[in-house]
Amino acid sequence: MPRSRIVEDDILVPARGWFVWVTLIGFWLLSLLPWRAWPSSPDLLLLALAFWAVHEPARVGMLVAFVFGILMDVHDTVLLGQHALIYVLVVYGAQALHRRLQRFDLLRQALHMLPIFVAATLLGLMVSAWLMGAWPGWVWLQGAVLTGVLWPVLGWVLLLPQRRIDDTDGTVR
Image (spheres, rainbow, N blue to C red):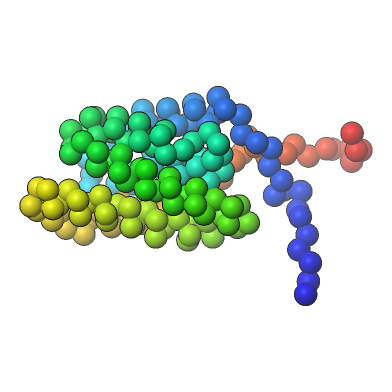
């Protein structure tokens, strides 16, 4: 059985608390823009919440997801609790898998998170459709899949500050 080597590029320093909160608030502000009215737009705030729930589970939990979900419900004037339910379910799934996901690269993490994005969005839409009496169609699936596809891109950008700086002269400190 071959042994796996730890590559120095894979070692990350922990994210700073202010960086996590600045990115979450930034994605929340980005989610307030009118481009989200497009039915198959990705939910970038959900993506950022899930990413930090995987990589920093002590800082981003279900309470944070619930608060941001309520804020998005109020902003979008939808059924109160719809986004909150979806965000809490995704963060729960991300925290349940976070130890497993740490072993994979960002592309394989996206493959693990994609069913969670789809299932949570489907459950939120089923509750909404049941209460409102109308099915919104299958356009929502494009947004959930696009959210999963953006996981490696967002992950690469958010992990840049955590990468270890290479020592140029090769000495050990």
